[in-house]
Image 1: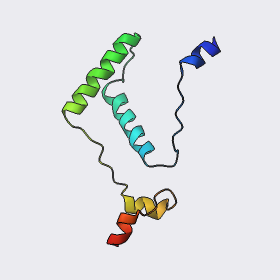
Image 2: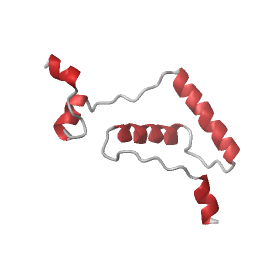
Image 3: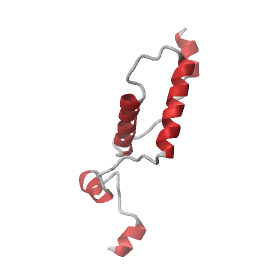
Length: 91
């Protein structure tokens, strides 16, 4: 049974230190509060509910107000956010 389930999984290696992970966590939190705050026991209905929520969110052009700027990222995580050649010229 475990092998059957494992064959259905697809693994993606993503950096754990990058700020994009925080944005994903924020978006999942919004999904939980706005759409999944109740029991949905049918997988088809769950997919429909999430798709409807996503369409509404995209139509409204909702965004995450991200406060962690590139400069702040470089100050905290310099190795993960190196200065590009284009940015070096403007400095």
